[in-house]
Image (cartoon, rainbow, N blue to C red; front, side, top):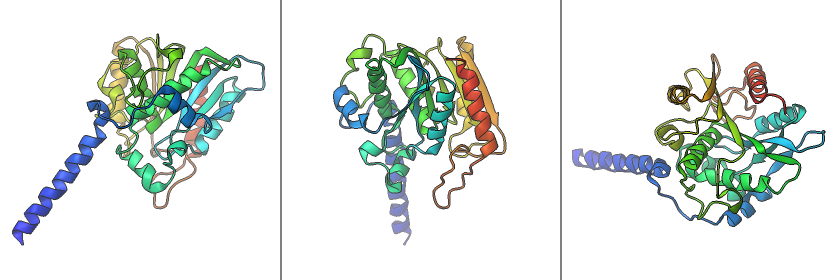
Length: 286
């Protein structure tokens, strides 16, 4: 019996180790099935949801990146608020085109076992290239707005672009941004992002000439806010323009009305309103 327990413990430890290593594959440079920019652009193009202001363009634009469970109505509302403020937006759906809508699959994304931040950054790259073909968009004024896993993705993209490191799902940079993958990006808004050890954005230098807004949750049980506070501190030391708000008494995902069964996360309308107001204030006039 003791020998059986020992071997069971060893097996469980090995499984845990393999899962941990897999979660770090973005940091380690391991990935599967890199594709051409054209292939990824074609994959996600039909799922993109554009929202434009009523006024005539060209408009500054925000790329909206969802949490690990895919786009929810929080991004729809944010898109409407942005349009009212004169900003265009595009919801970049990384989940639907890859068949990751089912709970048993997107939970693997949440656990870092599928489509981590570094891998998903390929979708940002091809979307940035696609902006150049839209006359109603001002591609010199771009912000990344990432929610949770989308914040992880945004930070990883910025770190890789600064270093000239290709996102691991891409075989090459899209031609339109090859010379400068950061061209036109003015800042990032990060709703309770993952800034932990598996994040390239946390482990590597970010562009100091951008503006950053961190909207964090005190005691975040999903994405420890202390890692993001440390990251924000490093950006401040690099003379970057950084703003941080830490919301008390709410949970991770406070702006998402839809919750999965038995989820401990809670929607908070008042904090959602405050976060959207902070986002619009940070972006400023169009």
